[in-house]
Amino acid sequence: MAIEEGIEDYTQDGTVDLKGNPVRRAKRGGWRACSFVVVYEVFERMAYYGISANLVVYFTNKLHQGTVKSANNVTNWVGTVWVTPILGAYFADAHLGRYWTFVIASIIYLLGMCLLTLSVSLPALKPPACNEANVEDCKEASRLQLVVFFVALYTLALGTGGTKPNISTIGADQFDDFEPKEKVHKLSFFNWWMFSIFFGTLFANTVLVYIQDNVSWTLGYGLPTLGLAISIGIFLTGTPFYRHKIPAGSPFTRMARVIVAALRKWNVRLPSDPKELYELDSEEYAKKGKFRIDSTATWRFLNKAAVKTGSTDPWLLCSVTQVEETKQMLRMIPILIATFVPSTMIAQINTLFVKQGTTLD
Image (cartoon, rainbow, N blue to C red; front, side, top):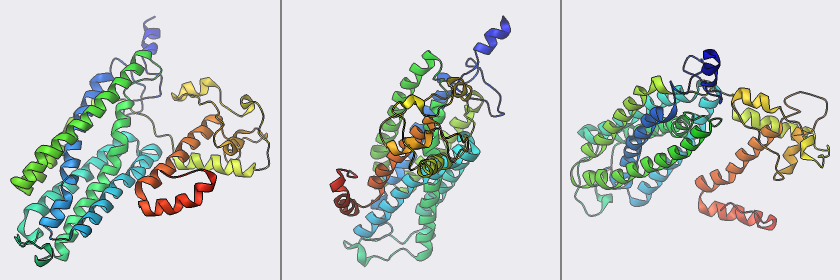
């Protein structure tokens, strides 16, 4: 009986410890583990927005660049910050797992912050102060000074690429969707998660920006760097309590299989009843700690990938759940385009799609 009770206490969503062993709910995960994650996010948001919120001012007032050039440099960097998470998510899902991807990326993130703090502190790494009303009359930053500053910024961007997509999912992994109470707690976790983001952002946009404008840039950048170091330490402290998801392979490969399978069965007719499409048994998903997804009528052409043809070739036959996951990923493409493509280009693209009744905004 004791053995049976022990078995029931194990998570059912496929989570394991760092060694790959099944974990018990009472030992790992839950709010005890998530508390470290939420506190981390407060300090990390302070660090990121402590840099980004006032970055244009530093480019103009300290590096003596024009307003347009400064704004362009900042938008390019911010765009990179939001693109690199695609790489971070890929390595986490396909190779390293979320925990190790996050830890490695955090080290890169901290190195970038440290170098950035040095670049605003050491006289040799910044141009001399200038009180001219016209920035163009001031001595511009040297090539070396700009290289150091940009290397620091983009090292930071690379680091956020591994932390941004993984820290929230690490938090979500601490709750088992197959356990009703934990499923409710997961919803509460995301409420606290958003609160931590807004609190950290508010602090950065008020206190840290004030320090940078009125006290010193060294202190204004040093504090978020110290905060990031503290947040990484807090996260690592919670390591014994975390649950982990095993890497499931490249999502791009899974998506490619669905598209290729659908194209190879271009002329195959879809059955009138979606239940006739190929799908794994519920038990198979339960073993992997996943849920089945029912077929939908959107992107119907992709449903052909799940039409049974007698072959089990994964590049010819995919499950309904695989098809629906691919649809979800494809729906993100217009959002990514709208986020990173200039608005003027979006307007031109929209004119091409207007006849189909589809736009990108």
